[in-house]
Image (cartoon, rainbow, N blue to C red; front, side, top):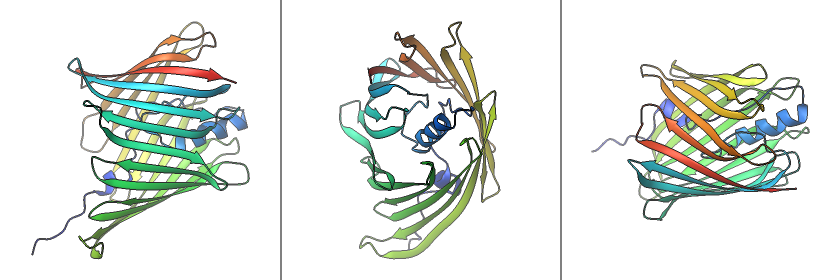
Amino acid sequence: MKKQTLPCSITLCTLLLSPTVMALSCSENLTQNRVQANNYIFQILDFIDLPAQGIKQEVRTSTTIINNRNESTAKQILNYDENGLITQSQYILFSDDNKRVYSENLQKTTAGWENFIEDLEYKTSSIIQFKTDEQGRIVESQQAKKALDFIFTETDSYQYDSNNCLISKQVQWKVKGVDDEGKFTGVDQNGASSYTFNYQQQQLAKVLYQFSNNTQNESNFSYQYDNQYRLTAIQSAYLSANKDEVNYTTQFLTFDGKNNWLTASKIRHDQKNKQTNIVREITYY
């Protein structure tokens, strides 16, 4: 009899998409710290975590090019409240032949937010529910993901300092194997991880990851500004156990009259033939 294995390792199940773009801040403004922390926690695919105060809606088009050929295109519509908090997000990823392969639909609810995710390539569907405290900070999220041969659940809790700055995240996850009839097979995995957020000069500088299999990873961030104090580049480095460091650069190329970026590009340094270009259309309050 063939032994069933589950399609995810301890680190793979817990590690979020590599945090290649970040500008999460920890200032004296408690409202903005809460808004930025919530927007970060949503972990919207390809989202660049920059303040969006005064923006009512934006439309982003991201095109990934490999060897001068379009590999994929993503369309995203984001709605914000007057403080820059995301109230709704619709994200759709298309393949090079314009077929929808992935989608996210985040929306605000009476209890917090819900994000519905569909991955057509890997044939999975997920729902993530975000719960807030009396201050409007997200303090817990629960995810349930269904696939043909497994069910994945995850519960995350979030901790803040007195300024509403996100300082840590605790993760508990479980994977249960299922057969063709949807019955549990008894082949299970579970684990935990913790994330610690460190700030320098009021900006996120390092994220430390500790996994239940005793491995440790980290991400480091640095920022560049022009003479008008506009953020022009974010450099990030991701270091995982027994692997080479992976470096990314995001550049903000053009700006509007309010100094919000309109075009940007992202590259991974060891993949010189690959680049993602982002175009942003903004509607203000």
